[in-house]
Image (cartoon, rainbow, N blue to C red; front, side, top):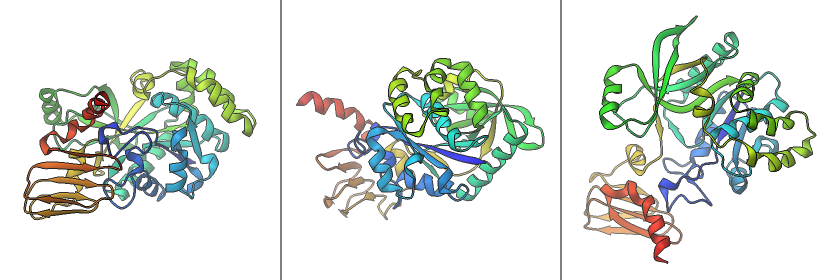
Length: 351
């Protein structure tokens, strides 16, 4: 039985001031009418029913999750008292899900990624889940066929060994850190490197055994969730989550285990982590202007204007960005838009 975990605890600092700690990017509609969280939920809900979809998020975001996904049951919202990276999040969520679905498998999805081919995505998840039935202790990750020499993503190096009976599934040789531009070009030309999208499939019993093996401190602190009474779950989390290993699942398990496989995935994926990523998918007008919210242009070209409510009129300017939030308006050269997050500390220092 396949369950889904959507990780929705990130702070989205690169989209400041639109994305804030109070309402980070996964709760914003940066690309379409739905928020990133809603898009992720609707996509996986085509395969998995709502009772088997779980959301792990920070305590301060539970209200937002309920507002945006009112169909989700209370028990399916897993609360993180504090952010401690992906390994504790996944360990906690796996224990909670196992309480309700014994011997289940699980697909893990970030809440803030764009996938343009939902049908192909579902096919790949189904293929990965079928593979897990034959290879119970394996971890399957989705690797994205690279379309450019990208320096902002980690990479997966694949070997020529293919999984038995699953020609599309390859053994992982290594996980590679974000490269410099020279190495990124080499990876693209090599053909044996995929982008690491941070999406995984595994059997829950297997991943918990790996948590116990590689980060035993985390497992020992949270294992009581399995057998405790329902009203004791929050107490165990509050008492022990702060003691877990603050580490990513990649460093904690994936880089140490030897049963890692990857499915090369042509699903129209992108990590919407920068304004330039948003620009790739927003419709431009005849003058290559991009708008979000109430905006108008009088002449001017190649601008990006983001409004959270107020109408913004740009008169005769080109190559600029304007970002309006509830309490700020930021104007700058468009070439510098991906450094807007660096203004946050400077603004604080000015006060």
